Length: 239
Image (cartoon, rainbow, N blue to C red; front, side, top):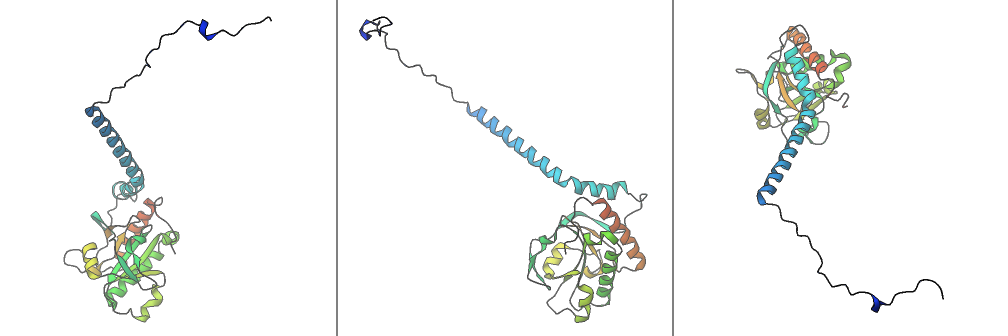
């Protein structure tokens, strides 16, 4: 029969057995491992720092615009800049209009703050009035600023004040928390001022004590400039 034939295994030449070839890789030196870990750690830190700078850039730009560029011809600001800024305390407080809430939950908008006990004397009423008027004079930007009255005791708020507080936040905050957070000017009381908190939750400005119409006009210019400079990093219309 024609065609190729299968070969007999006995006819093949014997091939000697050889050991398997194994390649052994040398382990890295401990110093090299430490250096590599160090490089990874530094790289991670640099990436985190870059991320933080990107997030903080709008805030830094806003403050630079307001305090350095001076968009209104270099006019000095009326309010006193607080340096360093002071963060909202991480505490739960009592909301007169609902359940308790955490103070940091107020982040996201500008806050114009007054402090007084629930009795609210004439100076307190005046601050509440200017607080309300300042917000209204901001026009289309008024929804970017919240009015906040921090009540420093447990007494009931006088009913005749409530109609004017419908668009405001009224919170009971313990005096010890207030004392560790907001500070009046030397020789003044905490309730003498209006305070400004930025959308990052940082107390950054204090208006002079005992505001009158002229002072309110100058305070309005400060607020308007702050809102213009920060148009990209707050939220309008919280409700």
